[in-house]
Length: 98
Image (cartoon, rainbow, N blue to C red; front, side):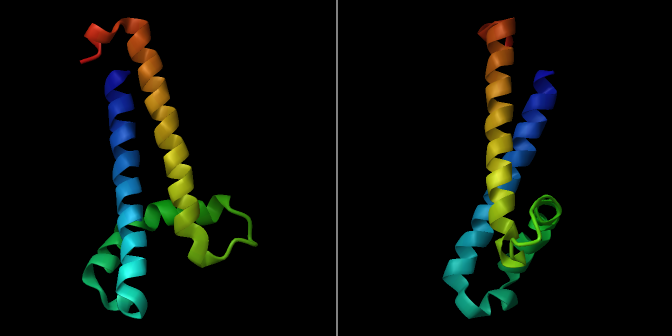
């Protein structure tokens, strides 16, 4: 159980960092962000998250806002997994949770 929680937490954490990096490059690179190699890499890494965000968000949400939706959903999922991991570790004993 602990291994599955650690893996889920790591996957969500990597997604959050990639979305944060894409957002930072969105601001820093300006209009030439589509030609930026690292921005393209972040877009490729975030494609599953943004596709899932476009699937769960209503039609009124613009496509350019889907990465923000994905970031918010991933942040909530990361917090839920972290709280579940804490609850699990308290249940089995903190010394067994290393």
